[in-house]
Image (cartoon, rainbow, N blue to C red; front, side, top):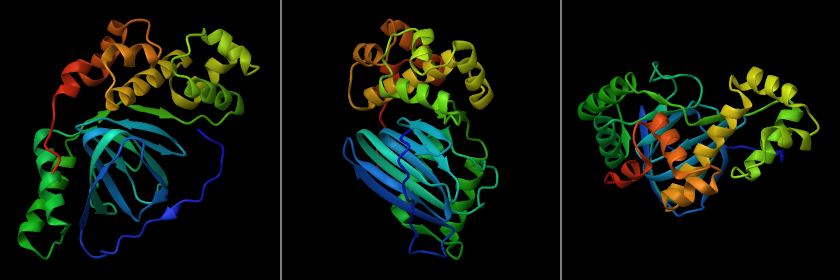
Length: 264
């Protein structure tokens, strides 16, 4: 949540005609794609590793087997936790009319996973090629059924809420009480609670829980053990983290990160 103003780069794709253009790239741990935007909608898929996407509106953590949907013209950065096999589909704007006009993290079921990986072997998909046309139709059809995953944190606008969010972001594992943290930014707990509820739809406690879950996801993506990730992210016990993880993703961290998909 840095206040440093950055200029977003317009990353214009060379292929202007194909309905879907694909991109395949493997990134090392810690790499970061600087602020940029496209004139196409994007489905950015992590076939392995964990990505963090930042926009002016919020932060999204994208673990393995998930993808982030980024509409056209949205400036964003992407940071890598661990080694990331990124597979991206650039869709002509509004080709996938079922998808929202805001960023979101979505589950990628097995069929869509295979479609993304296969499409990436084709380079670009043109409606003038029959096989490509069929593949485009199936991809778009599959996007109608994807489910969103609550792995995002909205950005705060009020300066007091911003200061508090920056303080918590700097040290997600901070175990100070929320009342004490609020005092450090010169605001009452009641005021901050109201601001977070109005701007994010979350209580401050829920926002902090989400921050900790997302930090633990990054640590796991870097190869940390569950116990280390849980305690470093501020959970009182590993079991508390496992319960929060299972509530959000439907399985335990150990089971989730044990599964691998061939990142072609």
